[in-house]
Length: 160
Image 1 (tube, rainbow, N blue to C red):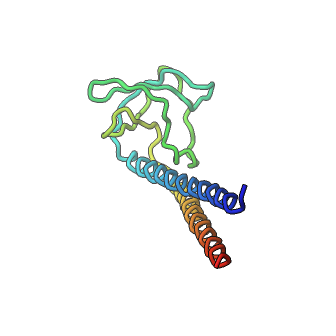
Image 2 (image 1 turned 180 degrees about the horizontal axis):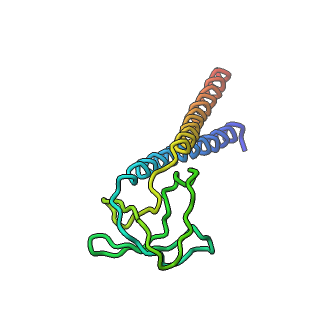
Image 3 (image 1 turned 90 degrees about the vertical axis):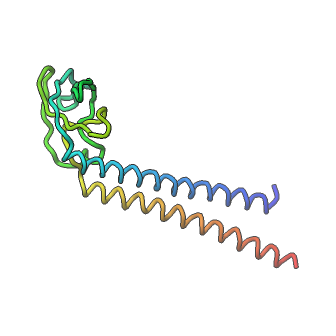
């Protein structure tokens, strides 16, 4: 394999890795922003009465529950949004057949939580990590392209 071809393949691999890092950062950041917005909105969602159907995985706080909204029944296992898992809320030990209060998204009745709200500190930390992924991914792409351009410049200069 020629030295030029090896150099181009090395640069391509580096570009792919840094590009993947930047893309992961963008998607993760979008997920965390959307999840935090849903967590904040959930505190003002309408509530309905639900019924615990069963426990999941032998865990006292993980349950399968059913609720009704606008004449239609929905089933869920979601206790809270993703970022709320990092808060210090106490969990409740639900028993099958027990009534509970369910917070229902008014725009999507199939999305509900038992504990509204989220963890603002977790949102900040995850946002910083997502931003770092984007920063280092784009920085790595710029660095790899500048290295490639520098190598081409010196190769052309030596040929003259």
